Amino acid sequence: MEHIGVNSLPLVLIIAIFTGAVSAWQAAYQLKGIAPLSFLGGATSRAIITELGPVLTGIVIAGRVGASIAAELGTMKVTEQIDALETMAISPIRFLAMPRFLAAIIMMPILVIFANAIAVLGAYIVSNYFLGVSFAVFFNSVKRFFIMGDLVAGLVKTIFFGGVTALLGCHIGFRTEGGAEGVGLSTIRSFVISAALILILDYVLWMLIF
Image 1 (tube, rainbow, N blue to C red):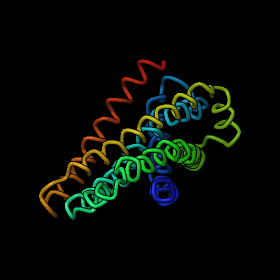
Image 2: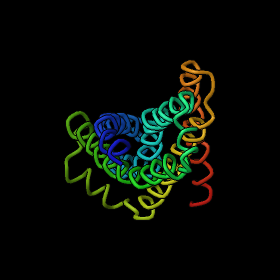
Image 3: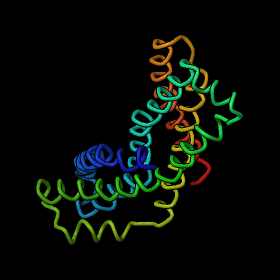
């Protein structure tokens, strides 16, 4: 949990604040001539809570954690450490995979809560200092358009994102062959497939939840 959650927090927060800032600029551009900027807070917060926060955090975790899981377990596989566990009647799935899976599905929603808050803050900073939207106008719009179901749906999606990332990293790590070169290929494969599955899952879960 420390590796997946606490150690990933600085990177997640850096990406989140700039995601919020870019969202504010893009929303302001889209609203120009269509709706007043008083809607900016609601537009950016809903986009962040339902999509940008969960998906971007999931991809960051896939790159940072999923790849590291595949590399760690892949190294254990090619150096026969997993075979040693099996000779001692210790299940590699129970001993190595389950803690990583449980940690991922627990910490992902927590990371996304932080990411959502920081991204909204980034959107407010841009809105206030560059677009002339006051604190009261921005957060009144956020409050007016906020729906608890959006937050819950976003957090539910992150449970699936975390679980898929951890399971895929473990699966690829356990099937690693070919020494150091195989470990490198497994690391790349874990990130690429995890990122693709997160986007596919995002679409499927959106259709099911909404």
